[in-house]
Image: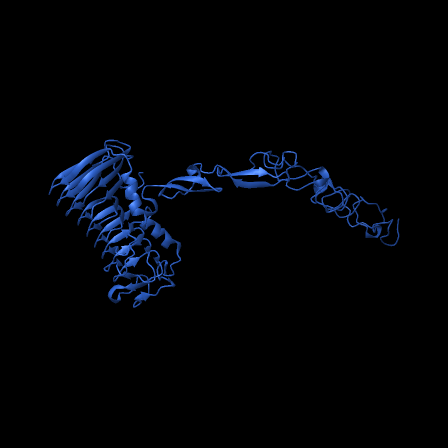
Length: 466
C-alpha cells in the first residue's frame, strides 16, 4: 500500500496497518505496538495499566475488572481478593480480613466474624487482661485474674517490691518487703516536728534522702559532701531545708512547700555562686543536673511522707514475727569478738536481743552459716552502741540486703570508723552513723535526730530479705 504517508490502513513504511505488527500507527488509534502483549503494551495496542479492563498477564495482572473498587473480587493491584491479605473483599463473601488466617482473633480462618463472647482473643501474654470477641470482628480487652500474682511478667521490677498482682487489668505492686515505702531511700527521717536530719561534711551518700519535718535542720554539710540522688524535705511552707558550703546533690532538691537556703550564706548546690536561697512555690533548674522544686506538688513529697510513716510499721511487723531465739545481751568488749550465727541457715532468723554493745576495735560476726539466702532480723529492745573502729563482719554468706536491725531503745549508734552493712530502723531514739564509717544499707529513724556524720561513705542497699 502507499497512502503517501501513514493512514489508518497503511503504515508509513507502506505495509498494511495491523495491531500487533510491531509498528505504532497512531492514525489507526494505536498508542503502542510491541508485536503482541508486553509489560507496557496490551495486545490491543493500548498502554498496559491495572484497572484498564484489559488483562495483561505479562504485566503481572491476574485479573483486571476495569474499576478501582478494592472490595470486589479483583483488587486495585489486579490480583484477586484472598482471605488473609488484609483487604476486605466483600465480593468474595468476606465479613472481615485481619491479615491472617488464624482462628481465635475474632476474624476466623475463612474471614468470617467469630461469635460474640468466644474465647480469649488477646494477642499478648499479659495474664492480667483477657479479650472477648463482640461478634463484629473486634476484640474487647478487659481485666481478669484480679489479685493473681503476675511478678513473672514484670520486665523491670522495683527492687523493693516483693510481688506484683493483677489489679484492674494492670500488673501492680502488691507486696513490699518489710521496710515498705522506706525501702527506696538511703536515709529516712521522722515526720514529727522534732526530727532533725543532719548529713555531715565531706561524706559520700549514695542514695536518696527523705529528710525530717523539723525546720532548719535537714542539712547536707559543707566540705565536699555529696548526695548521689535526690533530697526531699517533707516540710510545709513554714519549714526550711538548709545546705552547708560546697555541698553537692546530683539529683533534684524538693520540699513540701518550704524554702531552701545556704547555711550561713553558703551557695546552694547546683546554682550560680552567691545564690543562697530558693523561696517556696518555685521550680528552679540546677546548673548541673536536676532542679529545685519547692511547690510541694512533686509526687516524691508524698513518697517521702509514706516512707516517714513506715518506721513504726516496720517495728510492729518485725515484732509480730515468731522468735528464732532470745540471745539476751550481745556484747563485744574492747578488742574482742562476738558472733551472731544463723540457726535457720538459708531462711529467716529472728533474734531478740536486750542490747547490742561493742567496744573499740571489736568485731561483730554476723554469720549466715554458708548461705547467701540467710536472713536475719535483730530485734534489739534496748540500746545499740558500737564504739570506735568496730567491724561488722558479715560472713558465711551473710549480705547487707538480708540484715535488718530494729532498735527500740533510745540510742542507735554506729560509732566512728565502723564498717559493715544492714538496714537500721530506730523508731524511738536518736540514730547516728558517726564520722568516717563505711556502711551499706539504710538508716530509718523517727526519733529526735538522725545523723550521718562527716566523711561517712554510705551506700543504699535496701533490706529485701523478708
